[in-house]
Length: 427
Ligand SMILES: *[C@@H]1O[C@H](CO)[C@@H](O)[C@H](O)[C@H]1NC(C)=O
Ligand SMILES: *[C@@H]1O[C@H](CO)[C@@H](O)[C@H](O)[C@H]1NC(C)=O
Ligand SMILES: *[C@@H]1O[C@H](CO)[C@@H](O)[C@H](O)[C@H]1NC(C)=O
Ligand SMILES: *[C@@H]1O[C@H](CO)[C@@H](O)[C@H](O)[C@H]1NC(C)=O
Ligand SMILES: *[C@@H]1O[C@H](CO)[C@@H](O)[C@H](O)[C@H]1NC(C)=O
Ligand SMILES: *[C@@H]1O[C@H](CO)[C@@H](O)[C@H](O)[C@H]1NC(C)=O
Ligand SMILES: *[C@@H]1O[C@H](CO)[C@@H](O)[C@H](O)[C@H]1NC(C)=O
Ligand SMILES: *[C@@H]1O[C@H](CO)[C@@H](O)[C@H](O)[C@H]1NC(C)=O
Ligand SMILES: *[C@@H]1O[C@H](CO)[C@@H](O)[C@H](O)[C@H]1NC(C)=O
Ligand SMILES: *[C@@H]1O[C@H](CO)[C@@H](O)[C@H](O)[C@H]1NC(C)=O
Ligand SMILES: *[C@@H]1O[C@H](CO)[C@@H](O)[C@H](O)[C@H]1NC(C)=O
Image (cartoon, rainbow, N blue to C red; front, side, top):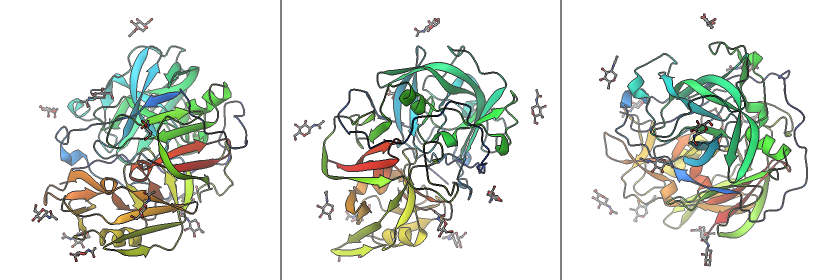
């Protein structure tokens, strides 16, 4: 029986070089923006999802990502472990999951139709969220003859697009293109929707008003909220994610860094091209926030092992755990005391909840960044054994992901002007 839940995006829409960009040219390449403390911050809260709220049968784990990564988004959630921030839609307060692994921003419409994991309509009682949903009209009107569709590994949404006044972190974007979802497979108990913070190239608008029709070749890009914020001069082209693992003193900041304490050096990591685009990323042609991990160092009982190869992985606030090469995951799993065991029932490694985690550090830009043991052992248990599941997963051939298990330890600035990430250890 699977007690945890994932919302990895499933759709493998291949990128088409002829994708239309139906907005004016966005901001261009520039020098790194200064990392000064800003007031444009919004506190981060955790989504809390009781494990009993849904039948476990619906939480089947789907293929996390297809081989064709571009055009997909990559939310993968564990209970209690995604970060949400408050955002105003017109005068409506919404609680949005922050996702640097996707680019569309949407909320559920009040009374939306509930879908199952295959996209078929299902029992409406399976789709309750206690977070606010959207009713009424877009303040700036609906956009006619287009539709919104995005498919996640255990989530799928369709809806309409419109223009809405969006306020977050004290910044108001008067006319942002956003979506309201009419049909959803989205099992998040306490969130209104998703705030996508990745590149414009991952946005998903389709021609025609029939939301059943969304051939990937016809996908249209539009200007996501953060691009518009920058184009309107509301923010420098950076945002910074600095969560606080155990509490409410973490922040998302725009155009600067939040007032949190850090320690040690800051390293700059270029945003890399991915095999999907095969081109040097620019503001028009990025997809995910892909970086290079120089090495992974781990050990217990005074012995230290080193993976010894660099790994390309995406930095994704919408993923809870770490998706890495299988040989690395297996070796780290064996470094727990007692060693972790793979549980077929949960499709995850688990350890007795009082196990001792190895020390694990990621080498980024030549600097080792430690991971706290609570970011390796989750509070979720396998129902057969009562053991705690690990946040370490086989990334398979679908691409490697650095989720909140790493990001919880870092202040991470996403600089879209300089096309780099800057990371510093949180104190
Ligand atoms: C991935 O996309 C390429 C290019 O569009 C296509 O040729 C290939 O069949 C796709 N692969 C899969 C597994 O969908
Ligand atoms: C739901 O989220 C809101 C906003 O973050 C929070 O105030 C509230 O306590 C949460 N409710 C539950 C039951 O977790
Ligand atoms: C939001 O604005 C609408 C239309 O002006 C109004 O009917 C509604 O009461 C407002 N809601 C709040 C929470 O202020
Ligand atoms: C929907 O779910 C509720 C609660 O689990 C149950 O009482 C009801 O019979 C279900 N309805 C259908 C049509 O399956
Ligand atoms: C929308 O598209 C679907 C699938 O192509 C089709 O079955 C349906 O009839 C269409 N709906 C309308 C209202 O045209
Ligand atoms: C940062 O550290 C200083 C000195 O220890 C402390 O006074 C301050 O409260 C800390 N700030 C935050 C935001 O934790
Ligand atoms: C990208 O392609 C190169 C060369 O084909 C391959 O060696 C590498 O493993 C691929 N990387 C990913 C993340 O798929
Ligand atoms: C660490 O040492 C303890 C005590 O000798 C031993 O029980 C444990 O298995 C060792 N752990 C690993 C991962 O080698
Ligand atoms: C777990 O699954 C694998 C592959 O499906 C299978 O070979 C293995 O026997 C299973 N182990 C247990 C303990 O069920
Ligand atoms: C961990 O818990 C098990 C059973 O719950 C107990 O037997 C064992 O002694 C504990 N180990 C440690 C290191 O506390
Ligand atoms: C990281 O962990 C290593 C090994 O435990 C330790 O020596 C080092 O001081 C830690 N670094 C930081 C910045 O905490």
